[in-house]
Length: 278
Ligand SMILES: [Zn+2]
Image (cartoon, rainbow, N blue to C red):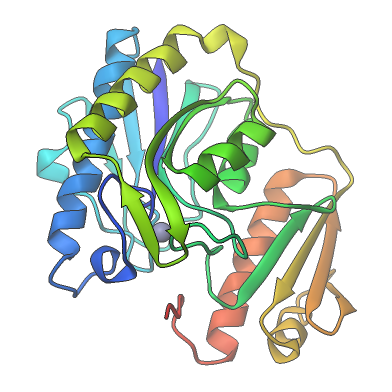
């Protein structure tokens, strides 16, 4: 069986600050090593339960080159370089998806919480707030692939369990505020990831792909009404109120593509960086 693995860095074992997870900072290299080791722990556990091939996607931040390819497990193929939509090459050949190092959704008090850009205050699907993890799981689910493992802080683990009840979780840290967290010892966190990955693959039959019921209403609340108006220039996107845009479609892949296009419009219309983190 082959597994698609999407890797973010905010929920990686031992990371506590944006200063560690953005290229150019002195601590970034440490975060790259930690992220690569978390991925390798998940692969080791999955292999113990019978998985054979691993495709590791690296969508974090703008450049999307974070993991250390020469330190990745020898059975992993690496997918990086911008612009990644996420899960570019998913199809029925994948048996399952893993989310490694994910984080709390925008507006939650979890460590480094956000959704794609700090210009976004909230994303809702059919009225329910979603984070990047749920969106990734829904995109995998669109292709019939269950998301069976998430690793990250206590907020993202609880959030993903609400959407994917059978999902295995490995909590790497407990959030104190958006800017502070208590991390498990790295070795212990990575041992937990390995065990959770093994349980996830062994129990694959218990997992179902996440499907979002059509018609799907995507609402995004932006930091300000200027951004909302720029985004509403897209065909089929309406303004719901001053700061909120709305897009409705039956097909989740179209919804996801629209959301990514909105993020590109929003960040370029203000001449802002892709992510403007404090
Ligand atoms: Zn990230």
